[in-house]
Image 1 (cartoon, rainbow, N blue to C red):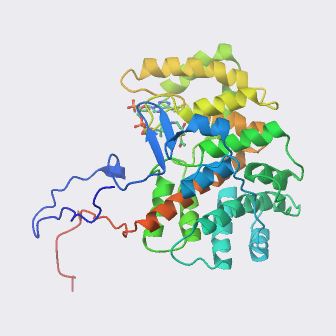
Image 2: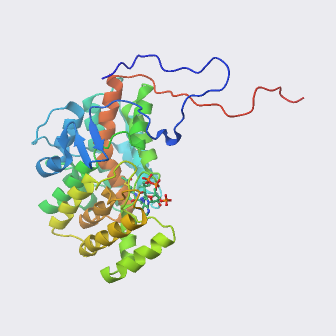
Image 3: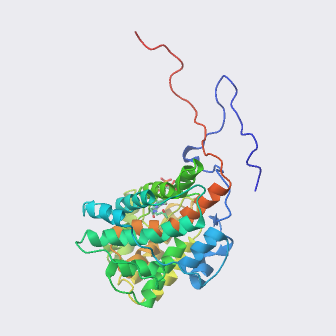
Amino acid sequence: MTDATAAPPTPAAAGPDERRYSPGLEGVLAGETALGRVDGQQGRLLYRGYRIGDLVERGSYGAVANLLWTDAWDASHRLPTAAVPDPVVAILRALPASAKPMDALRTAVSAWGATQTLDWPPTVEQARALTSFSPSALAAFARLREGKDPIEPDPSLDLAEGFLFQLNGERPDHGTARALDAYFIVGAEHGFNASTFTARVITSTRSDIASAVAGAIGTMKGPLHGGAPSEVVDQLAKVRSVDRAEAWIRGALDRGERLMGFGHRVYRAYDPRAAALRTVAESMEHKPDWLELAIQVEDVALRLLAERHPERAIKTNVEYYAAPVLQGVGLTPDLFPATFSLARHAGWTAHVLEQAAMNRLIRPDVRYVGPSERDVPG
Ligand code: ACO
């Protein structure tokens, strides 16, 4: 770690502020972390030094969450879902059935925080409790909006399997549980993305872990962050068949549209999470019937994107193969963003712990560009 106490550059007492400003904080080093390394040039993603592909192959979400929280690797570590406190169920019951699952999840996390004693500093136990609460809360809302009662957690099931059980009322088969577990692992952590940064800012004020995660969910809800695997499904429905792919994609690019599931702010190489999820999707027993079409359309899309943007590598991103995995495990597209949030709980809460351990209030400067000093009229 570098010396975080070194005095920051200060503007001259008077006169214009010449310090460099980077819109969106793009390229600005805003912290240090030992949790995840995103190597956009090489297309590599490491959690505490371990390659994402290896973690998917040999780990489970419980083991990966524990790794992020404690830096200890124990492949047998399990993380069952936890019960939803009665006041939180009452609040979820009061929401309109039309509420977005992301709004319901954010509300549930906030309400959960109000039922807990969340002293400073945040602890691994708090991180574990919140990460295992949220899948039960989302499953409860998904059932309540259909007029069904929530299902109590089965402590013998690991997190992804338990979530599907509480959603559907029956245990998923092994392959289905394993596929969602793999999705949870690849979604667990991704550096200083907007929602993680939000969680760290909130934590830096010594606020509690539930406030940090509620804020992070609110940030992830935005379409520029939460991603769009459901739009990948819509896009493939419009393409319909591989022989129409080239004409359809050329038309979309001519109209200035973005191809969903391609491009990334950081990755210039193939997103390693997409590679891991493609393998998972192909090995699923209940894969969607459009998976083969997705694989063929991907080749056409990559070729045409390279043709259009020879200056910029636009490759497949995680959302492209998240779509068949999430649909294959039986989730409806409106649950995709909130399910992504469930997966990111491990990373958010690990960043909360890391921020608290080396805390300094995050409070950057802003350049004033308004009117110069003047008198109030009259
Ligand atoms: N399809 C077509 N053109 C694209 C795409 C795409 N998917 N992605 C980038 N481009 C083009 C842009 O049109 C732009 O071209 P121009 O300079 O001629 O206008 C150029 O590439 C650069 O685009 P930026 O938006 O500056 O690139 P950035 O890397 O910041 O964008 C983003 C990243 C927002 C993800 C973008 O690639 C995109 O919109 N992709 C489609 C949506 C998507 O898949 N989102 C999920 C992202 S992964 C995640 O959030 C977890």
